[in-house]
Length: 76
Image 1 (spheres, rainbow, N blue to C red):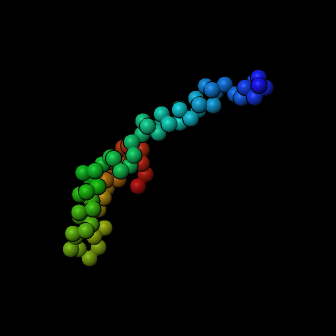
Image 2: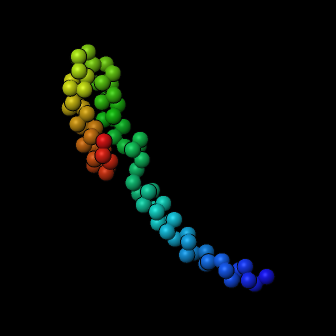
Image 3: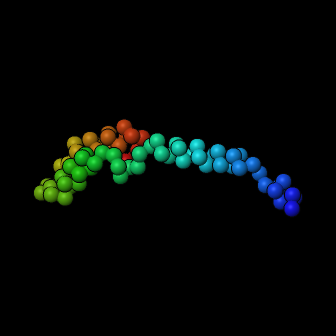
C-alpha cells in the first residue's frame, strides 16, 4: 500500500503554478466590465447615426472607447 503514495507528487508542487496563473487573470478585469460608459456612447452613436458613414461620424466616440480599453491593456 505504501507504493502508490510514494509515486504521487507532493500536493503543493503542482497546485502552485495554477494558482499563480489564476491570480494573474484575477488582477486584470474582463473586457466586458470596463469602459461601459464609453462603449454605450459608441454603440448609441453607431446605431442612431443618420450619416451615410456612421463609423466616420462617430470616430471621436470610437477613439475614446479604444483609448479607455487600451488603458486597461486591451487592444481593440
